[in-house]
Amino acid sequence: MAEIIDGKAISSQIKEEAKLEAAELSKKNITPCLAVVLVGDDPASQVYVRNKKKACEFCGIRSLSYELSADTSEAELLTLIDKLNADKDCNGILVQLPLPKHIDENKVLLRILPEKDVDGFHPYNVGLLSIGKASLKACTPAGCIELIKRSGVDITGKNCVVVGRSNIVGKPVGMLLLSENGTVTTCHSKTRDIGGICRNADILIAAVGIPKFIKEDMVKEGVVVIDVGINRGADNKLTGDVDFENVSKKASYITPVPGGVGPMTIAMLMKNCIIACKAQNNIE
Ligand code: GUN
Image (cartoon, rainbow, N blue to C red):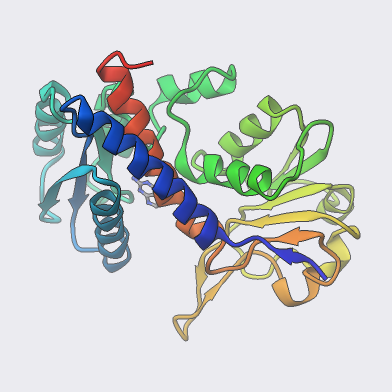
């Protein structure tokens, strides 16, 4: 039976660490500040944004909130980003995704100054990540790595299999595992024999967005499983990409859904706000 990786507990530790760092900065009269921008009224995004603001409050990070109507034009949003880029007191800018269809997401992400890109989505930061030099790493992938390392699992030399190749999880988590000296294979919808490849994994990251996609016959005994899936069923219940009940009988470590990767994203965002603030103030 697997040991369950407690994402809530680990994310609390990370937020405590961010809080301590914010307190150190306040001794120098510096208050880290994050601007959170939400366009439209998607209920899930509203919940995420509310939780991000709550985490800021806990850590001692000032948050600026911009809640714009769904008919905000791309030009108006870009003007707001320019204003926040120029604001010396604002260290991080987060534009909640998805954006309404009439706004070009890539154009918006490109406009955020890389040093304020606390989501780690700007192509400049993605490039740094791919050469192992990023300071602002995408939050969910960085959270997966923290869950593995803080469980005492060494990634070096392990067969790491990532299922899913999205720009916000699959690709960056593969890069991070490679930086940690893992041997990385990325599977996707066109991959032949996904089961065979997954059965070879010492560490398996599931980020496909298909409920219970990873079944017990696709994993080997002792595998470490990180489930990034958040699939909401018709009954509003959350299900991961892994068949937890059965896979947990074979795994050595496994993250639950909810309470695994989910809480880590916001904790890593808080950490990124501190990193951005320190860099902008030439600290360390
Ligand atoms: N929408 C879903 N996940 C994320 C995230 O990590 N950052 C932002 N900005 N939007 C999201």
